[in-house]
Image 1 (cartoon, rainbow, N blue to C red):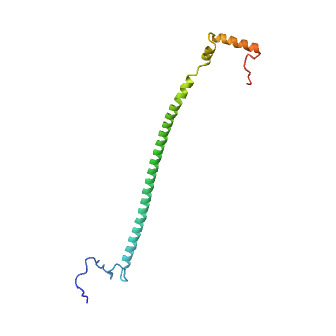
Image 2 (tube, helix red, strand yellow):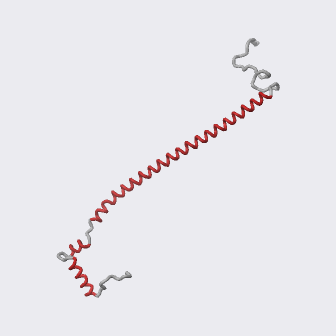
Length: 145
């Protein structure tokens, strides 16, 4: 057999509000319209606060996304600059031997001096004119060529 204890209500129970028979948190018929209006206003305020929080979260996320994209773009641009600098350095290093070999190619006068030792440029010009006359070549190059 079970015995019941009499005494004060348990410590976790809410006290009753005036004009209400509520003890479990469920509204009863005796609640006043002002209490219901207050509950509706409180619920509307909570809904608005939730909506505002969602908007703040969205704005915060968008701001973070914009900052991250700006950082990524800056890092990409820096990488492009570094890459171009490295490519230019690599090309310069690769072309240096080619440029040196081109610089060392002898000029026409040097080649003629090697080919015809003892002849001056003036003497070579006279010999060319004589060869043109001998073989019937024009003294000037053609204009349409």
